[in-house]
Image (cartoon, rainbow, N blue to C red; front, side, top):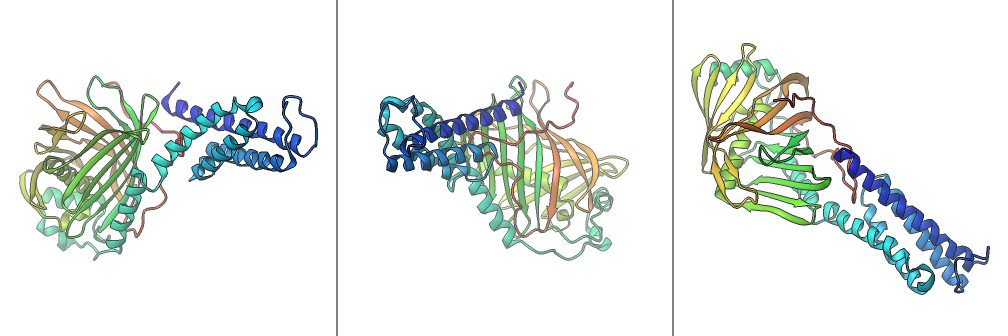
Length: 403
């Protein structure tokens, strides 16, 4: 069974169990209103309590249906259903105590839904910060002209012409959706993921990235934030158990390289006004030194004969330990390919992230650019919604996994 199928199966199984649980509650209403004699209920139920059983049943059925349908904030109804259901079970304990087991299952689903979708969740934090960043950087900048490219080295200028930057507005921000798979080490299992990202290019660049991954069938939330010159990373399993919570100068330096990388791959037009010092190596290679917020990082960019960027290599990226407590300098590269027309530009849609330790390079990230929009005012609703124990099915990127 694949991980997406497993998670979908858990959602469907939990939802159907809750719906059946709610339907059983309706027996209490039938008995209370005197519509029929329910042999399974030994105790008497008044008409008033019959009404309460009816309400509890309706709430529980509704919560189950909303969970199956992946309805946003289903957990609000789910919490009410747990309270109402357990209340009526207590009043008929000898007949209905087994229903407590189902309520515990529903309660677990509600708790997880609040943790993953509630106001204090990583997803809500991402959404609030992303919308704030986009609102402050909204609006198209001046149109890129051929003259703007004259300040760039020839390979970079040719790349910007190739991607169609000339004639398009300068990039003030972008909102992207990506998907793929990631692993912590060469001997660790792959985790499929879908992600959403917002970058802004004002006086102080910002980068916000939320990843919804799957590890051993369990949901994993990953939130990267690069705001006001500082970077943080938080990783939680089931939106509850913190695996990584890191920040500090090393984390910020690592993320500064990523900000430069994003600009080169996802927002090439932003390179025109970026604080980058360029050095031409040859027709296919340039070195760029990016300085922002007191951090200076460098990378070598490689272009093919079609003037397309095909690789980005930096020795300034820092590899984090499993718990994010320590960082080690290590060569990092992101070979890219699959150029296609998207958002009125020609961009690479397939890429990898590679670490280059002494024992040999390995790919830890494979990604696909699913969608991107520039100079937007707000982030559109996320294509990834995990309601309670649910998640949208994940699409594995079409890559060669036989390396």
